[in-house]
Amino acid sequence: MSGQHEYSFFGAVEKSFDKAARFTTWDPGILEQIKQCNSVYRMHFPVKIGEKIEVIKAYRVQHSHHKTPCKGGIRFATTVNLDEVMALAALMTYKCAIVNVPFGGAKGGITIDPKKYTVYELEKITRRYTHELIKKNFIGPGTDVPAPDYGTGEREMSWILDTYTSMRPGEIDALGCVTGKPVTQGGVRGRREATGLGVFYGLREVCNMTDVMKKLGLETGIKGKTVVVQGLGNVGYHAAKFFREGGAIVVGLAEYEGAIHNPAGLNEEEVFQHRKKTGSILNFPGATNITNSSDALELQCDILIPAALENVINGDNAPRIKAKIIGEAANGPLTPEADEVFIKKGVLVVPDMYLNAGGVTVSYFEWLKNLSHVRYGRMEKRFTENMNAHIIGQIEDLTGKNIAQKEKEFIMHGADEVDLVYSGLEETMITATREIMDLWNKTAEIPDMRTAAYVVAINKVATSYAELGIFP
Ligand code: GLU
Image (cartoon, rainbow, N blue to C red; front, top):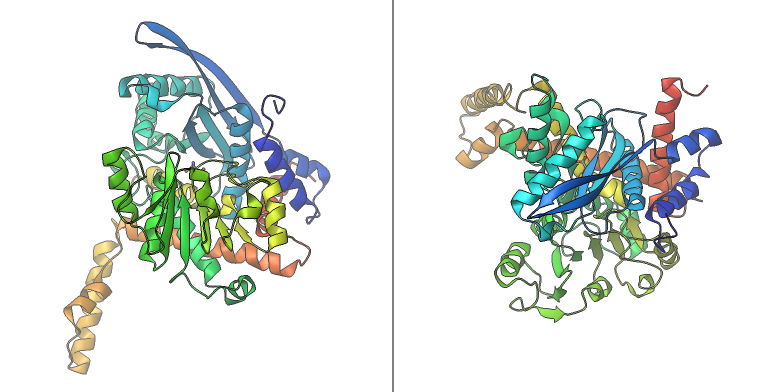
């Protein structure tokens, strides 16, 4: 497999795993079991496109069954191959473990360019893929739960849900067979922006650690930090949005056709609209064009956020990168060679399988919502509001003073679904950041945050294997 591709993504994940495994005391057998992909399903199926029959190649890999269901997105791209899907599935296992989401890791992919097909054709391909998964028991609320990834979104998740429910009539928890669905189809509010928001919460927590910032020669906090985001898809767009709203200055945005730079700051929504209208990110009013998109990675900034695909920062360009912090919003944007360069340069790499875990965390909330058959906040919202109104009334009566209407509304507000989802995500990202940093601080020999994150993940997965009684 690695013979076909000069760079093996799964090999890179294994390398990072081995680097971290040295800092654990687990039996080598347990470590080997954790590392392997448990089930690999490669399929070919025919789909009629126009007058022709096209043979479509697709995959679903379940990396770990230490907890079920397995969980992970589905990617539509021409670059999808077995090595990539295996690597991404493995990252899902470690990601879920770090953020305490009780799933094993999985990933799926279809090797197609979604732009080359009509919506109808894409629907046919997605539905046929879902059929293949059903036939082999590779999908279901208790077995394996797909979600969006690169090239897929709410629309594809709806097709998957509809195909699944039509094949499994009466299955009461069928809504939980896939996440990232539209809210009208059993989705949860906040899922769309979840990965970008999680990236923001994670990096904000890191930036609030005074000792960590001091070492990097940076001020504590997000405010005023300069940020470059590569990729204006769902993850990059929302990461840029939350950073800008949090007081950072987004000085650079990159897409595959080029990048733009403006030290005064860019508004992601305006850039998005410009790109929609003109077909390109370039020539945005007030910004400088960068025609070679990857040059944007080398811009002067405090935080660089690669939010597109894997392997974009490697041994070649890593030495030229000027950012002090790299926040991996994408999966696997850095190669192990790039990691070594940044360790030497003292650049803080905040690793993917924890930093971009916001997506799967909120997927978990969506799945719980589907299994409980009730919207978050439905039971307690009015109760909280009535109680708060009563407390405010009592305070006003006792003090003889009136609380301003705006303050009153803020205090009274009972949590809506989106409030609870954001709160759960914020708690998850803060806890995970602290857990990784604590472990890193305690073990001086651990060279980087990625290794610390892997150690946390390995310890959790190994513990759960041990608790399952598979190993003595
Ligand atoms: N595709 C996303 C990821 O790589 C989300 C997975 C999910 O929600 O299951 O984390």
